[in-house]
Length: 62
Image (cartoon, rainbow, N blue to C red; front, side, top):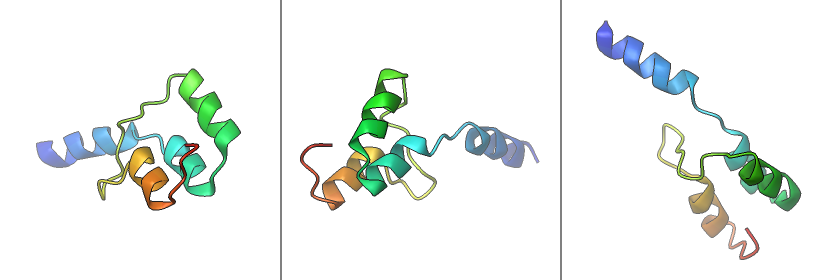
C-alpha cells in the first residue's frame, strides 16, 4: 500500500506541459514554460523527456 501511495504522489506532481509543447513544436510555449521554471529533466512514466522529444523531432531550435 505504501508503494502505491508513493507512486501516486510522484505521478500527481508530474507536469506534462513542457513535453507537450516540445511535441507540438511550439517554441514560444517552450520558452515561456522554461522562463516560468518548468523542470527540464522531468520524465513521463515511459522515461521520455522534453529533450528526447526535441531530438526525435530533429528540432535544432528547441
